[in-house]
Length: 264
Image 1 (spheres, rainbow, N blue to C red):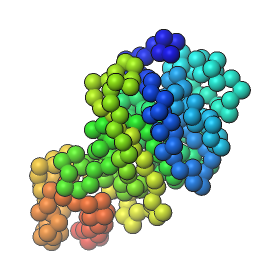
Image 2: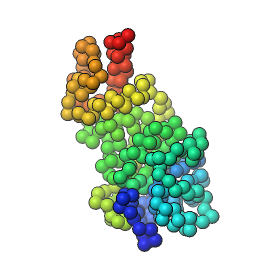
Image 3: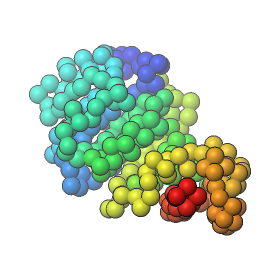
Image 4: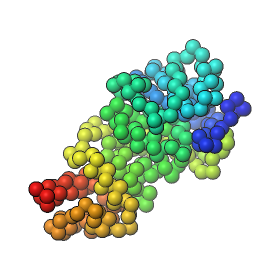
């Protein structure tokens, strides 16, 4: 099968060749409360084959012209729309309008974290997300506080989504095989995903904190011009990986209040 479309290194392509795993990934979406699904990087359609059997409106998007041509030939008359394009640059409103949609796929590893950040940007429309990543990236997204892999990606994803690591996939089931294990995860948007704090401010706080993750927050957040009073708060004696997502939101609220009281 892999002879028809050659995996391109610059696109981060590793084609899954295990039908059982493809079916398992296709079943990770609950399909609750939406009918539109966007598959990113379908390659030669090993996952697409199982998705088209479901009662959904499926769009498969790939940057690779060769893949799109292959899918046009092999999925003729199927319940599938094909889009040639770069997900990271695509205006998703042009795909589904303002309707909700899920995202799934065997994601190209070189852009997988950017795919998650773009999903977060479009969270109002994306109630669910599932797919395959490099294992350590999938673990990082799902990590909880106190874990060494817990970081920016963990906090910002889990502020809006419940993240669940589902299963590990070995390199042997890909062509060409990657050098690392892969991991499949699912994100389900929280019932209440509106934050009590300013969202942009939360992103700034989390990024600043983890850029100097070995330092206490009192040191890593110096650029926020903390007042002497707020510096006394015990939370500033902690390191970023010790704080839960809820505590990061509380921290952001404290910084917002501090900025108002310092600069009335």
